[in-house]
Image 1 (cartoon, rainbow, N blue to C red):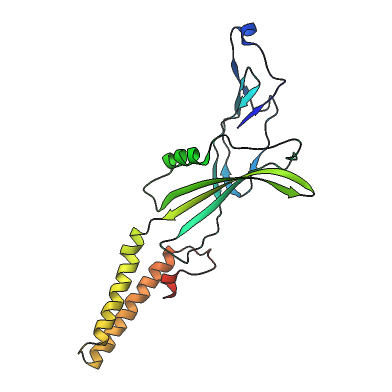
Image 2 (image 1 turned 180 degrees about the vertical axis):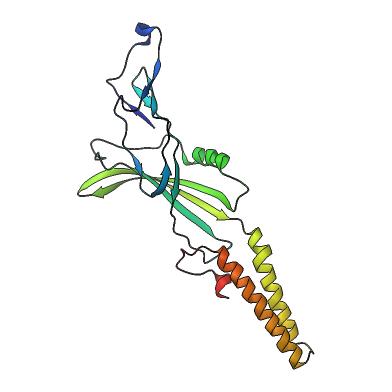
Length: 221
């Protein structure tokens, strides 16, 4: 966070060339903001800010938050999900008192985020976009900044464990069904395939999230 306070300025030459000082957060006014979608979070212990001689305040406070996002898994495991992180302050109207803007461009933040994100996990961080708008509540406009995060699932594990075995079972089923085997052998093999498909369905059910309105295509077939 960075903001200006024209009443907190001084000439460094009058104070032993001191151009910046570190102060507690409650010493001066600081922007009261919060995350709209936050479900659970860990507040930082860095309750300090840096004051420059020109009245510029700088506060770096890392937050670790857990968000709840709506998932659309119709194309599982080749799905791409988006999650919003909205930062707002509903204490000061945006028109007259409080306006929030981003200092860095989405491309710069995208580069930094890819450096911090775990690259060998299930999800691949693909895009980051920023929306700055005014939210109207009770005939008053309030400044809101929303970060739209796009994540792409890595499908390799699901292809090897689910899709390929399922396709192999059905191809084997078709081969036996139209093969020269006797009726008794076909019935026994069909029962074995049904049991194998049931086991794959159980594995798939344990792997999929339960918060989607539509089941995946691989699950319905």
